[in-house]
Length: 122
Image 1: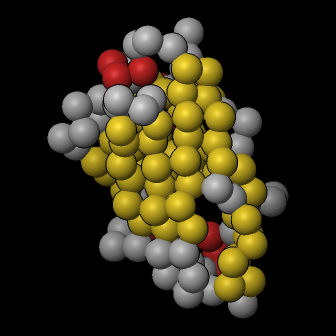
Image 2 (image 1 turned 90 degrees about the horizontal axis):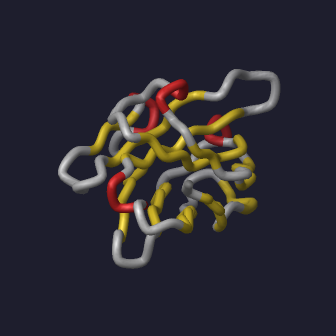
């Protein structure tokens, strides 16, 4: 069982930065691949980024490549999403999730956090 709690969301102007954190409970955290997803109003939840349990592999959706960086600290049971050069279209609720399988499909993920709101003003 893994419990996930996101933090770090907020209101920022376009071009600004935010760092999201996701704290996990459970001794098996380091064995899970961890992903970030987001859901904007009226839209389906979409994949943002994933990092493998070993930290060797990362994958990003095209719209955030070069702007967002996913990382993890297994000693602290925490993953991060550094978001730079934010755009109004990045506005969404951001969720972290845990999966035994590496991938971008939300159906692969077994555990989800409650989400944190990110709002980017123009």
